[in-house]
Length: 253
Image (cartoon, rainbow, N blue to C red; front, side):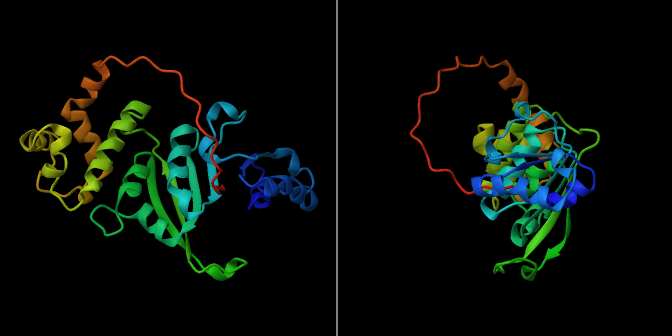
């Protein structure tokens, strides 16, 4: 995949958590290309710890084969951390692809479906057979494309995004409840929950699993919560305490 991207004339930053693979990739590129190696940067890193100030060239596209356990966290982290990314094409396990591309009300629609749509439009691009891999896995894979919104339909600052994501988590923690009941604790009461939902043009009897990302955004904007949190004084930041070392997880992009 890296060779194919370089052949297209792109500058590629490859992020690989496995030190053996990270060391081997430049050698492989050098053995199978000419000047393309000059456009490749390899980072032996966990993708979830990568931040935009660490890259000299800000990426405009993300192309990746993401393992099951890190696919959604990696996508959400990169879309939030790198607003320069306009297009995403990833291969993930088929069930993850179904969840990412699911529409409101469907059985696969859930937290990943809504949160990814906060950043852009999501489309499925077909299945990938296990037989194209070696060794052959026991699962099918799916391709998913995400195109970031050209004109941002809502605020994208971290505070606003965090509040919207909190509402999404609340709704899907009790996805079979009506929205009135699901948001009762967040709003302070069932009646206040219904009032806020109606103010956002949402029927309080609808379930959270039927709400689109635009519904969640509108609910936050019309609830008054955003303004209230903005006016709340921020607590003094405490120095972080040292944490015991942890074994790195297997994360590859």
